[in-house]
Image (cartoon, rainbow, N blue to C red):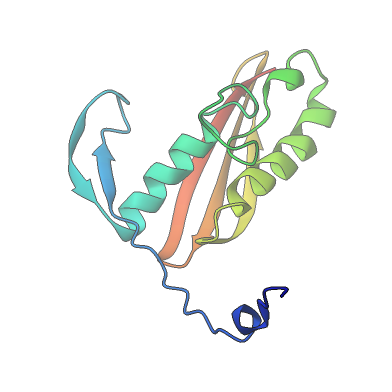
Length: 135
């Protein structure tokens, strides 16, 4: 007799959203961990970690985690600005808690450095973020 698994297809599943509670990092130094954080503060930390992790470099992370910045070195600024915007949006929107990334502003404070500021819209509220890239 062949086993029947048709009952599995009729089951309904409830998906529960996992809490965002995590260890709190000192984002200024990136070294100290003190207590726990949740919601908007946890999102600031998640954004910081995503934007400071080079994609495909660490086996511990999924290939969907992090941002690709290494290949931008040596490229002209006219190429780097729109490409950096696209890569930041792509890297951050993999997180389901992030709805959109907008309001990009670029500045080149000195030769070989590109600084961008932007707004990250999350389910907990908006976060102002920034990223500096050596090009």
